Image (cartoon, rainbow, N blue to C red; front, side, top):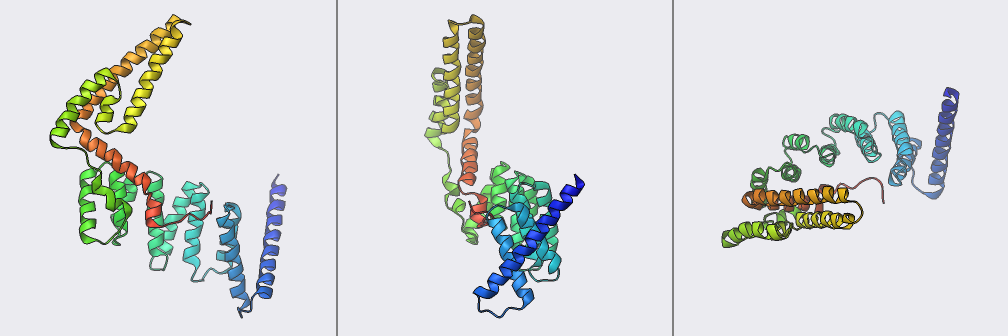
Length: 304
């Protein structure tokens, strides 16, 4: 088994070297530039690595990027190659290795052209792993204004709306960061005054008659739809099984009753704090609509 693995590695290495030679020859024949052999080899390796990453061939992308580091350990592109290796591991699903590489990259990229990008991609990695507290702590230590957007997304997902509101107001006042979420942030409001009173108590009355209608009146249409669908499904199943087996009917009927009571309890809890609850859900959905990756303009490697 071990000899088979060694043979496979040797074959891969030979194929890789042949590919480099072919790329170099085609590069020389097809271009009039006067590059040194080292420069041509560098260009060829990077071209191959980027193409592998672009097509999602993560294994060969990693091999080729490491080949570049082995051949040119002192090159000025080394920090950006370490960043690419971290990104490849992330997109390949190797999250533990990706985090380790990102943390190494933070040190290697400090003070280089890829410094800010490496920090942004690291905090984006934490955010997309739903490690919002860690992303918040990291971003709060960064001085660049762009990290305020990450902070805002973290605060929303951590349900810290008071802090998120304060940060959003500062961002609007300073006008330092233009992001789609800022433009619509304070439009995610709930009703006030007489409308608030009517909605609170009207929601309880409506929920007694039709489960889910109370949530709809309170503006949470998503929960309303699921609540009504669940209740109708339980009642419908109970009716259908009544003629087949009475024990199923009693189980499903009891479930429908508990579901109905739970719906009323949810509305009672929601009527006092529904404004913040509904607004919070709207803001979280807003972060899904305008993904942090798109806002930061950090594209993935693979082209889908």
